Image (cartoon, rainbow, N blue to C red; front, side, top):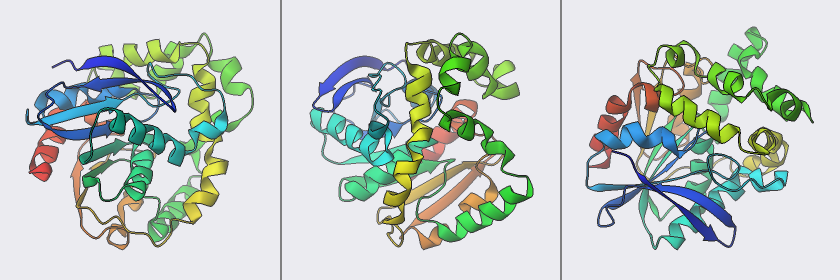
Length: 288
């Protein structure tokens, strides 16, 4: 089932939004990560119960949303405010919330900004912002391998390098991160082609890198969140073959949530595209 796409202009900018179109269904807002777009939810939507209305925006700077050059706009709390304004423009009050990768961080920010509106919360393959003990476990593991899996994050934080080295090489750059499962077609080739198309839009090497460059601005804000808990029922779906988000990331989650369930599936980082049926079935069960 292909979702309908449309551009929505709000006070914060112009955003591309995928919408399942069943306006009588209870809304499920799905937030994608890097280097993807809202297209990543197409497979899951195919298997998701028809009674849920899927709304999936393209993040600022990715997909077909606007390319804002100011790095300040990519602070994750600001990107969460983008999503809230999109949801408001659609006339939606309460919703279920799903976030993967950077979308999972943005979803956490949104859940803290509007806890009464987020009725259920699903996080996939991303650290939990308030999980100090888990972060300590991750640090021990990453020190042992010199933080090598994070290389692409440090690369994109550098001035000028992403702009100079990625432009013209978008196919090589984007395809690399989907690895063998992308080459084998386990992650749909048409999905990767769509992300390459979007990454080839003018200025995307800058706007995508701004997700990482803005982390210096995010860090002081994230420190203020420590001790906060997610009060809504929550589900963490973990693709346990990930090399960046490791098992240590999902330790001590009980310190961060009033109600949390963890489900592991045999998949790597882009689990919603590797195992869309399995991910959708877990969501269907949880959303009941």
